[in-house]
Length: 229
Image (cartoon, rainbow, N blue to C red; front, side, top):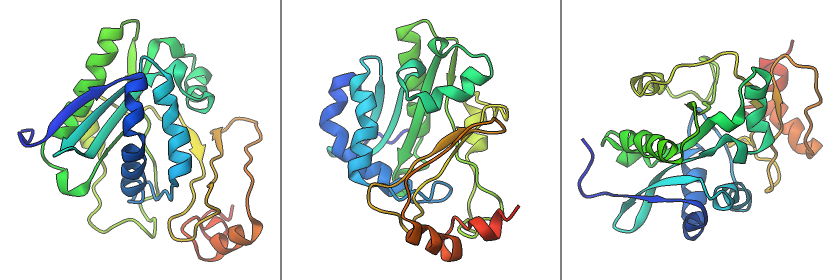
């Protein structure tokens, strides 16, 4: 049951703009957790979230506690997303014009278990229905190996939650990305390189080689130890 003391607000397009700083801070806070392990910056987040401001068909489901943003769930038509997000679907023959992308749902830990995920999913799905023209709603999840050294002992994947709302995994829809590690950071502007699994391609990013060497030896992206082959 949803907590009656919390307020759920729906904003779209340019109306998301006033909340950008709050959303950036929230994403940076939550995405440091496993399985994301993402060391974000407010500068990058502002650029990333501008995509939703620029799309008049986007949606942000905000959860407020006394005016403070403590959770958000975002979505937009796939054709308004970056090409890297569209590519796995194009490779499998999907028409991005028929897809509504449910991007992220982030919620501070102390507010979890209060029924807010239902508001997140229904808010985005209802928005997609009102827009019309979509066949599927979809989102992506981060995959980490079960033996990952930063995986908490009490970690529970959200697969059961996603299935409860009617979403099932599609292993053929895969993309890869490199996030700035949370334990050994890269320069403040971060890196992001995305590619399609098992496809001939170049995937590249600008790196500080000294930082990369530290990560290879000590960081959670242990290239030599975990992926020696």
